[in-house]
Amino acid sequence: MSDALTPNPWHTLRRHTPARIGLGRAGVSQPTAAHLAFQLAHAQARDAVHRALDHVALAAALNEAGLATIDLHSAAADRAAYLQRPDLGRRLDDRSMAVLSARDEAPPPDLALVVADGLSALAVERHALAFIEALRPRLADGWRWSPVAIARQARVAIGDPIGQALGAKLVVVLIGERPGLSSPDSMGVYVTWAPRPGRVDAERNCISNVRPEGLAPDAAAARLAWLLNEARTRQVTGVALKEESGESAPSVETREPFRLGGR
Image (tube, rainbow, N blue to C red; front, side, top):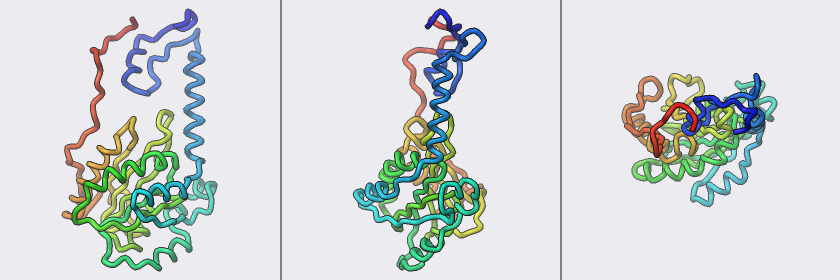
């Protein structure tokens, strides 16, 4: 460390977390490196919010993996409208409703899967395919899937009209979560039984922070498979369905015990 930097005795905790703790100080100020790192993280979070989803590349990747896709869009015409009018992000535009109305899903699917940009298109671009690939073998028997709906300028509740239009028993929405200052690419997973417009958040289950640095896609897929099987059996989601799969995030392994203080 530089002679100008006064270290913080908690700095060794940074081995275990990306949180900004134990940064030390330079005089009465934050160290320059820490200040620049904060500015970079803030810029990355802002960029994630405004980034446009590359839906063409995402659809191509899903198609290559053997999954058909449907291109949909919310009633929010552009990003500015999406950010200012959350209600528009919960509804489909007329073209998308027409696309869904023209489909004949017979027999109706058990599961409608929606990939939505949300507040971080980067999240679903990075993690949606890996998550779906981890989920597929866990739902290989007795589950009928609709094509994957890729929804732009979308909020969580857009899954409700999509699931209803497809006649699905359950809808799962993979969506970019609001970026944090250490997680611009966090993906959320929302599950709703008997989707229809008007469903509220209390009627959904959520798996959050899906990314390698948070809850790994494979572990998240295991939790979702449990929730889906239980939801179909009990015909409920949300507060009526507690997540009791026993799946937990891997613990942080360290080679030596934590000691307060520097070396």
